[in-house]
Image (cartoon, rainbow, N blue to C red; front, side, top):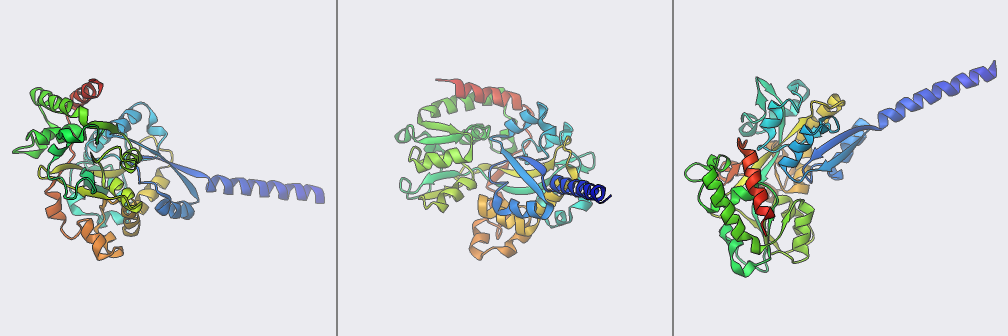
Length: 354
């Protein structure tokens, strides 16, 4: 009898431990931009929710949509689409509608961002604004004591083999800006005609001798600067931040032509089997204190203005939280590109040209 009782106790203990282990090892899988799953802010969420956050990083918006349409929507729970593909992902049913009552911090987010129609479909909201920022010129200050004032510097023959551009449609937009195709209406960048795209292609082919490499990840561009392989590039504030942390002489500027930029959203995939945990993650990531921590890693501007209360005056100023309206006038936020396939065709022809 005692032995049976002992066996019963062992069985109960084993079941309880198994339940505890499965709870502790619940996993949340992310497909996000670099910098959005740093341990400095993710670890606290894992501890609070007894789970493991695993992240894969994407190099472009097209990579994200290709993976989702290829059947990966069930592999990942949370994604971070930018404003150029967020609408298409929502319309295609690849993301789940959000219950905003589970996201109290949503009401703290910038009305300038939440009022945009990007992630609203048929009265439902499919994403939360998370971070935003520009695609600036990043440059080596030992080569450029003064900030370059135009994208045209990329075409200067003296920088042959010393320039890097992003392997992304943002480089197409940049060349279109150099050609003045954003005048008088910046949104024209996302609706270029065949003739305009041919002119952009010609301009980019002229740039190729100066391009050391087209980068696809932030770490790749950071290494190009560190190794003194490039002196200027189109990049993200993330790379500027990374280079400053290692005391590399780096500068960042928006030139006179202005630049494009992005509003990154967090979405829960339609195929996620962890939607409740994913909703908790979204809430955690848009809370003011977490937003400040994300900004520390990325250098991006937070969607929650209340993050400013955790920052120094210098940080508030450097993130333009003290003058958001004026700063955003210099950034043409990515929009849905109706002829995206044609843009990609032109871009692929540029890359393939010798």
